[in-house]
Image (tube, rainbow, N blue to C red):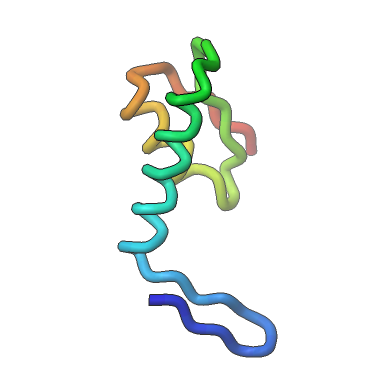
Length: 63
């Protein structure tokens, strides 16, 4: 469930997780070959963690 106000977009955890999985599917379907997931700690850590688990790759975190 998404809700908007004039300065914020609120996304449910369910929507956030689904969009993360949809992005992982797009990356997989692209055929792009990579050997590590790199994420930015502030805001990207959850997506990086999910990608590292889905693709069974090491995760590097930039802070």
